[in-house]
Length: 224
Ligand code: ADP
Ligand code: ADP
Image (tube, rainbow, N blue to C red; front, side, top):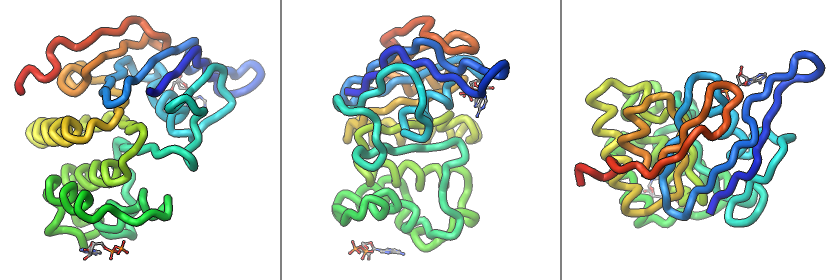
């Protein structure tokens, strides 16, 4: 279970203080997938940065499996809009980067399954600049699933892709998610993306982001 209680985040000092999130609370049950949707500037990236342990100094409690967020202790997968691949590393090296950082050996059967499922087996020695946007995103997804994260965070994961690639990537992502049930929270400003990929949808107010409402998505899995 991931639990955020009364999270308030402010940037700046003195007269220049900007409140990015205000008394924000959310729970992600194990194996659930939550879409956080809201307009630009409502604090979505800030929320991901807090959950990833990238920014501190906030008010409120942010717990992953009952423990305060700590990226060295917990496994947190992060898929950014620009995919966050290291350009000087190959597809294979990028895909196993999370494990390498943790100093852990890979479960080879599982790793091969994920690389195969994402159609990456024939391009393991390529570099990110030799890949299309959809292929780069598949590497980022492979990296996150290979890590078997306690929490997978995604920032506008499918927004940068063309429509056809986006739909097939969303389906592929959901297929793998159904099989491995990684707890996932993603942020988006796309209603379509929230409705297609989110099993629960949390709607934020304009800046500073507060929870405006939360629903169980009745359309989730409609095409299964
Ligand atoms: P979103 O991802 O929903 O667009 P952000 O989390 O990026 O929103 O930003 C929320 C608010 O915090 C905005 O008003 C933004 O201008 C402000 N903000 C974000 N990062 C910083 C920063 N490093 N310093 C100052 N203000 C920031
Ligand atoms: P470990 O160090 O944990 O034994 P390896 O780096 O040897 O892991 O690689 C694990 C698997 O991935 C092996 O089956 C290996 O053949 C394959 N592999 C490793 N590097 C590459 C690569 N650059 N391209 C394709 N396959 C690779």
